Length: 432
Image 1 (cartoon, rainbow, N blue to C red):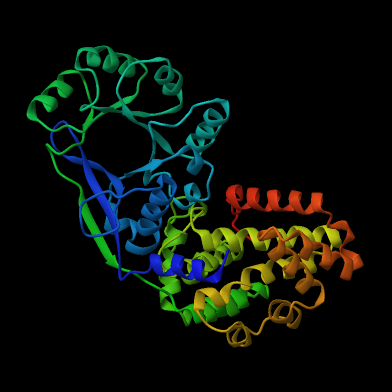
Image 2 (cartoon, one colour; image 1 turned 60 degrees about the vertical axis):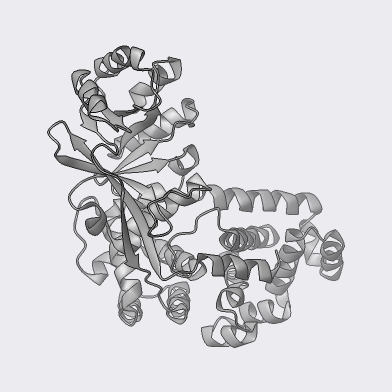
């Protein structure tokens, strides 16, 4: 992937403000009980969604990390659209179960794997809403035991069969939401059928909230990552963080939205570090660095895909060459992470690496391609562009690379890509 493409990707994400939409969900008396959170990329009250995964990731990142849950939701829960893919993603664990309802999109395929995942998340305290229901059918009946709320699309549903649909859902003890209610007649019919909650243009159109984008200085993020890589003590980490108010603000929001806090209010920097953990803090800093402050860019971001997969590939390859050498594996991972940092900063590699005070072997690997790490980085780059002759040349020049056969390299690439797609941060303790 050429650097020019990556730079266009970065520039395309930059902006001065972040936005999120919210639409009220009301009870039968017209009292506000919740909001549905919606993706917006401008002050215009329109949804321009090209990727469900990225849209939800930005909604959550902006609500939790940039605008803040209290400002967006107040005391009310927020309904967030979730694809099947996102239910197995890190993004779930950034949300507090008592503050967010996971709204399953209508195109989700339910099977035993998904039912099991829903059961795990419900046990953790999450509630599920089934979105855009229009008919009583077998897929709905199979899904009902795994959800708590059913949202019926009043624009698309067959009105003649609404009584049967509502009765079947209520019989299962589920809460009924009438969505896309646009007329008084819709509202009256829904109330008569026993619907509990109501949402639609008849009550209110979505409101767009915005905030100035907080973009922590890249230099500060790089220093923080360097400190974290050195297994710092609490005092050293606190000292570094206190120099960077923007990062502290996002850390506090992350800590107070983390499952680790279990409802406790994190009020001090020390508590926030303990709640998030140094491992997750490192990942967060890396994401902020490559996202340029625009929220979490997740799997649809090409730059993050490349750097994440490359770093993991190098870590795995180091493990093949020297099993049990954790120091080499860690250094290989950091080599992958920092091998593209010059693209983000639009600086010469030597200029930025000199400021990072990285270990000499990592610096020379990136700048000169020498040493075991440099050789591995060269193999990684050749693998990414499918340059088999370059890989063969490296293996001939370094007999120690014989274990990295074409079959092994292909296996490591697949494992690295799978790790990037499925890897979760420690959700029990968050510790490194």
